[in-house]
Image (cartoon, rainbow, N blue to C red; front, side, top):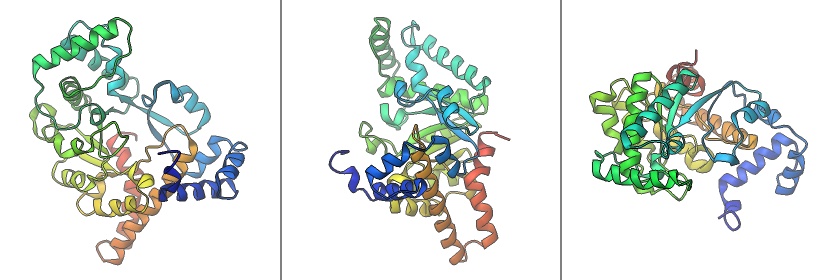
Length: 332
C-alpha cells in the first residue's frame, strides 16, 4: 500500500500541501523532508493551537516515544490514558488464574488513575470485535492457560479472542464506572488486522444498559463508517460520547461529510475533537487543520440552513474543540 497506493490518496495530497505550507517550502516529498530537518517538532505543534494533549502511550510499543521523550519534544501540557490490553498482557505470566489476572489489571488501572491518568482505552475491536456476549467461563480459562504458559516461558504474548478480551473489557468498564473516568473504545475503521464487520459500536449495548455499569461514560473513537450508529447511541444513552478522529484526515472530504452527518443525531455536548495523531508533529498539524475546517463547514451549513444561529454555532465550536473534553475528562 505504501509503495504503490498511499501517495495517490486524496488525504495524502492535502497532507503534503499542508505540511509544505507550514514549513514554507514546495509541496513535494523531497522539499518537505529537507525543510523538516531544519524545524523542531514543537514549532509545528504550536501551529496546531493545541492547549492540552490526552495521550495513549501504549501504542506501538518501543517504536513510540516514551512519555518523558514526548514531553521534552513537545512542550504542551499532557495527560495520559491507560491502554488496557497493553498492561493486561504484562500480568499474564505472573497471574495464576483468570480471577487473579483481572484483579491485578484492575488494581493497576486504579493506581494509574490515582497517579493522574484521565481515562482507560480498549482496543478490543482489533483483538476480538465488539459484539459483547457473556464469555463462556471454560473458554476463558482455556485461553488464559495457554497465554499464561507462553508468558511464563518468556515467549511474547498477544491478548486476543473474545473470551479473554471481552472479560477484560467488562471488568475494566466496571472499574471505570467506579473510578469516574471514561472508557475509550476504538470502533470503526483502523488497521487491516481488525474485522470491520465486527466493530460497530452497536455491539457495546450492554455497557449502556446493565446496572453494574451505572454511571459509566464511554468515548467511542474514530467510529467511521459507523458514525451514524455512534451518533444514535450518543442520542439515547447519557454516558455515550463520540469523536471522528482518524476519519477526519484519513477519509479526506468524506471525513468532513461524516462530521456533518454525526451532528444530525449526536448532541453537540457529546461530540469530541480528537486527531488520533501519534509520534510525528506533522500528523497533529494536518489533523488539527482539517478537523477545524470540517467542523466550521458542518456548523456553517447548519447556520445557512437556519438550524443554528451564528452565536449557537460559535458556542458549539468551542464545546467540540475543548469544553466537552474538559468536562468528560474532568480537566478543570
